[in-house]
Image (tube, one colour):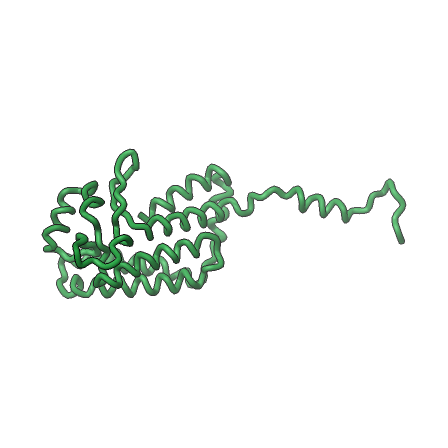
Length: 207
């Protein structure tokens, strides 16, 4: 669901700050350890892409996801002073917590999964394929932090999300909007200060 916060933030940012201003601000992004985030995305993509054909990778994927979350939280903590990042960190931590206490996988409630593709639901129920998610059962710990929120039309995409996803996406939204509009503040106050420092030739000046 991370892309939802990005897309919504971009839309609002462009509407408030303008296309040119928004693109200019993106060119000024400075993140501590900025290389970490794209690397983590590539690692997750590689796991999703190859785990079905590699039994060893599939069995280790749970631990890999936990490690990815830990490194990701370190990156977010490094940038915690940026607007929105504390919320992103909180959301990621909640997702990490529920996965850590459930063997490295995210529990999904059957009710929330009912809005998903029936094939995917059958796969969860049969538990024949190792994935990042598993169907919630009586042994699930901290079930309220799992994917228990179903999203369906009129929402653009059918998906099951967690409380952590919601908090994380709010943080992403606020960060992007702030980034794209931060230098769009009115400059009247600064102009007033500058004008006050200019000598008024119509009045006598102190020497």
